[in-house]
Amino acid sequence: MPGGEHEGADNPLLVTLRARIRRDGPLPVDQYMAACLTDPEHGYWRRAASIGTDGDFITAPEISQIFGELIGMWCAVVWQGLGRPAPLRLVELGPGRGTLLHDALRAARKVPGFSDALSVHLVEISSTLRETQRDLLVEGSPPAALGIKWHETLDDVPEGPAIIIANEFLDALPVRQAVLHDSTWRERVVDVDADGALRFALGPATLDMRGETSGTPNDGDIVEMRPGESRLLAQLARRSEPVVALFIDYGPLDATIGDTLQGVRRHRYVDPLSTPGSADLTAHVQFARLARQAHAAGLATDGPMLQAEFLGRLGIAERAARLMAANPGRAGDIEAAVQRLISPTGMGQLFKVLAVRSPELTPMPPFG
Ligand code: SAH
Image (cartoon, rainbow, N blue to C red; front, side, top):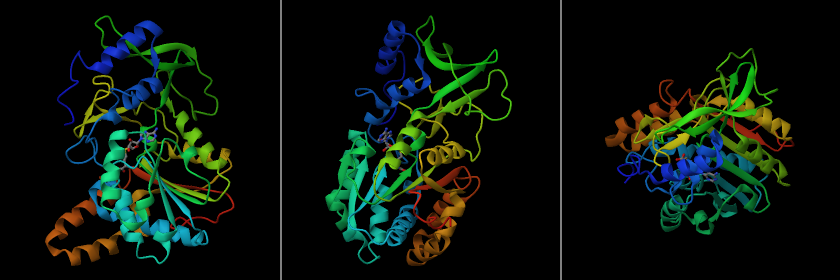
């Protein structure tokens, strides 16, 4: 059960973090976020049932099967464009419950030869979610999923042409925050107050933020940086065979200023410092910066594009119409779920899609 436990002063991760900060000093925000998410004993990703209606937050593949199906068909088209390599490494970063891949593999079975060419690799740090993925993908056994392998990082995925899917993966990678204070940028840190509660503070170190900000920032402004993004892009760039990665996440197109660190628990926002390890912590993905970093790593990009437009170009309306015709009793639910994925007040506008690819490849559909 999510929630219930870990509420108050006896939250075990709070006790650990308090002691650590008193001993070693305040924690930069990225280290705090990493501890909350990945602490081997009390981190958020150790918990069961984080994703879904009964969990803390819901994601696109959990809203509608069409999301994973369209991505599966997209993978098959990209594979054809790569010249139908076999094996193709189909990699998902942070697969959650495995729902996207389950729907994708089912849909893509219709493309001759594709399933047989696949070697499926899941990059997942949560042992709890690995079990959930295994239950759905191996026990529910679509043929191509039988040879699934799990890895800690992308570097452990064997060489070979690869298609990489990452839905709501980057937002979970820790962010550092810089605060402009008296005209110098300082690291934002998490400290302990006299009552033992966590609070934000300014760290002693000044940060060199040249190239990280645009315009004229004001005192008190916060700029976020995500070191895991450039590490991941470097891993992509190191691969010797063609690679296409699809990043779907929420955040602005242009560089923005502001604190976007948020805690979510049982579908509600919570103070990110209030219940360490029991709330999901994420921050916006800045797509302009992601694209810039990809270029700096020697990769090419397509997009970013609004999720609504991306799904529209992949044929979400046609697929929904067919599914509704085949399931008239569920037509209203199918329609409502699709609207949630594409409407500007749902996920259609906040979510963006960026493809990152080896520079020798031609632009990817449906961008080019
Ligand atoms: N893609 C899924 C789940 C998104 S939640 C969906 O759309 O439903 C984020 C996922 O990334 C979870 O599976 C989480 O365990 C995993 N994750 C978070 N940080 C990770 C890291 N550093 N390495 C590997 N997996 C990570």
